[in-house]
Image (tube, rainbow, N blue to C red; front, side, top):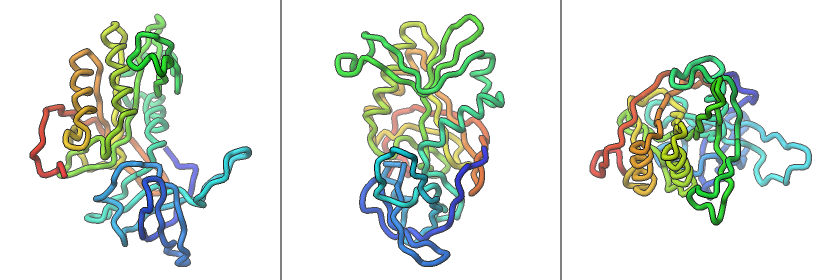
Length: 259
């Protein structure tokens, strides 16, 4: 997928909060503020002095006034320089392109695709507060049978293991619970992790950071929810799906990558 934005390199200085970074453009040394779309901790990536890639923000008519003039897109890994995407908005677009190109074997043969689809079901978990559940994708086969899909963006990789989440995600756990409910009702459901870098050989839930999400993922799989993970090749101008990697759900706390 070719990007519609153009990036420029900058030197990362600091991260005042989860959604904003301060960096110095390498072309003219101007200090700028950029929106960080990934609310994860990103401690192993956003280290002062590392090179990040930012794009000028596009202000849409009628949109609220922005506090930042740039968007953070990528970071060069501090250890080996490999480009890592921090844009959590990309996975849905990556997944859609993969569907259209027939990249995902588990989802071939579906006739219709819709994004950001709301499902009304009063039996959904948390229905009392939010009876309308919205999912990233709904695919329909020739008989009108659906599969409901949630995509998740993973950027943390330690010792070639992609780990999700990088910070506790109640929203992510709720999505998994809702998919579990669908699977228990006989409806096909799936979670797809898009690892926005190529250097992972498997994916695991981050038991130490968010044990509730990890446990929900195990229960989802036991209920029939399908769980997949795919890596990507990334450059400043495009991103391409690379390969499927296995998902390991074993409960574990003491490996080196769980910091």
